[in-house]
Length: 174
Image (cartoon, rainbow, N blue to C red; front, side, top):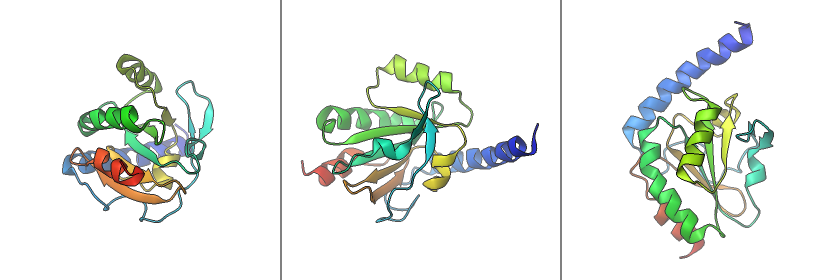
């Protein structure tokens, strides 16, 4: 194991512990991630075919964006899925949804299979090096960051108790 990979896996273990603790807490509201009003930072990821992409490529000027930091093993993420499906159904043309799959205790192939099995129509991106997790200061999974049309953070929350439909409805005005 190289020094770089050993460091990555040590950090990955710490991130996994933080994710489990955050997921169990079920926090909602403005307690996590970047402060409100922060401009969305850049982060390099991969699409599920392994091609490099930038998270900001999925943030469209004038259009709010909901970003979920997600894992296939996260029960709170699964509990949020109906809300994401509803948001996509009602406001899919007015709101971008992006799921960032963390590279802890899951494979890119497993994420791809989940997307295919569930017929999900919005992008899932693979955070192989944890760049998005670091840039958005994400302590766990089921963390949602909502950006307004100018790319600024207007909401952060964690866990199944979030009212994402209400947050998006308030942001887009119905």
